[in-house]
Image: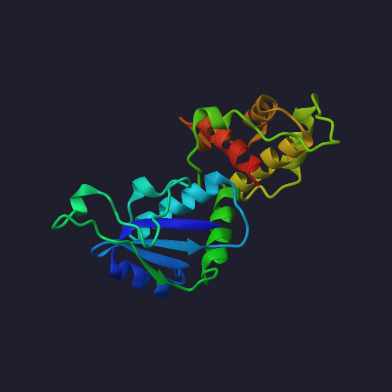
Length: 220
């Protein structure tokens, strides 16, 4: 998994090394402006988590947040940056390559694990569109989707869980409901009825909370 930090300054490059996010390599794209390419992990992650991490690191290291999407292109060393604002004396600046760590950074996997744990415990809400929220992943081949008894199944999940951490219990109910093959509407209805004091805990945004919890559970 790679992250691009675009339009950052040299002091932020030094901070990346200090913080354990050593760039795989970095580029000087114009005078005193850099792109840092960071390899966080050897594993692939879902695009929602990758996008969240990219925006978080862009904020921390004062990079361009508008260039933090997962489809943003890196510049190529040896070519010129053709933005006219960098044109000087009729010449565009060449993109210069600097070798970085050339492998996975020190703190990458630790940081990813912390983000995933936050998502699982519903402490972090991933930015998703309403269209994405309504779509759950397909059930694995060979598993017949259960179309009934969702309420009874979810009730068992709640009764066997730790009532001291209700948000984690909600995530667990959504997670196992998805794996059992129940639909989003079935899981949502069951959680609405069975989640302890949900009317008081999530007053004013119950529907959004349930949809995001189900969506986050589907990403695991």
